[in-house]
Amino acid sequence: MKLTLIGNGIMAQSLAKGLIKNHEVEIIGRDAQKLKAIQEKMPQITIKILEENENITGKNIIFCVKPYALQSVSARLTGTCNILLSILAGTKLETLKKQIQAKHYIRTMPNVAASVQNSMTTITGDNEAKNLAMEIFSSIGQAIWVNTENQLDIATAVAGSGPAFLALIAEALADGAVKAGLERHLSTQLVQGLFSGTASLLKHSHPAIIKDSVMSPGGTTAAGYGKLEEFGVRNAMIQAIEEAYNKACELGKK
Image 1 (cartoon, rainbow, N blue to C red):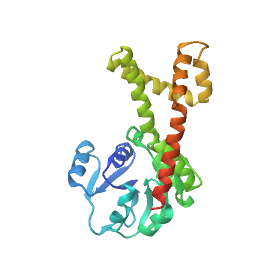
Image 2 (cartoon, one colour):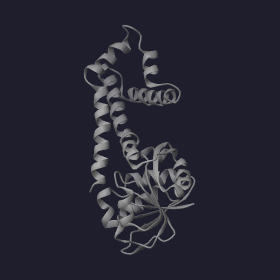
Image 3 (cartoon, one colour):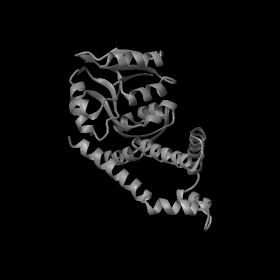
Image 4 (cartoon, rainbow, N blue to C red):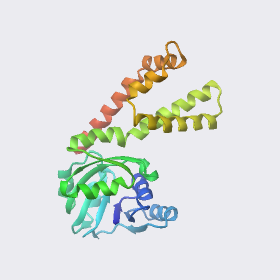
């Protein structure tokens, strides 16, 4: 299947890197230098500068620009695409329908792990295009269909923004080990293995069960866990998800 990505930013590149393994990929963007650099890294893709009147008729479009660029980019698009798959955070289907002509509209939120075919992607939109959307995004990881745009906005906070939140935790764990006296390269390797192993455990067990299975009374884990609660790590993560969700809702009103 041929897929056309409009946008040449980080997410477009992450998606392209994962999608080229199973699809023919074209990237249309406004930055010629960046497009050339992308093609040097991924020679399999086709690149194209966005024209003033870019005909998208019959194409399967993954729309990858920033929400603020929707109007300026969509003004250049002519014709009616087969399907519009938008990754724009908070941007409602109704808004997309006013800006871009398509037979089917889908909102989706993949994450940067698409580049290693391990994205956690949520999808909603036209039921007629559900199977096609699920097929495309299942090729770069896991895909979940949600029933409402509000659910997708919440999922955006978890799966879309989540890699940044977890990266902060990973960095802090490694920094803690370095502070205690472990070399940086060993600390980083330990954290990488920790996240990989814990991800496998989470597929089979509730987080609370994993926590309790590790935390012995009066032990090292209990001592460290007490500090996490003392400094409000649990509440900070809850607040981070809430703020990211609120931001998605705010973007949807613009």
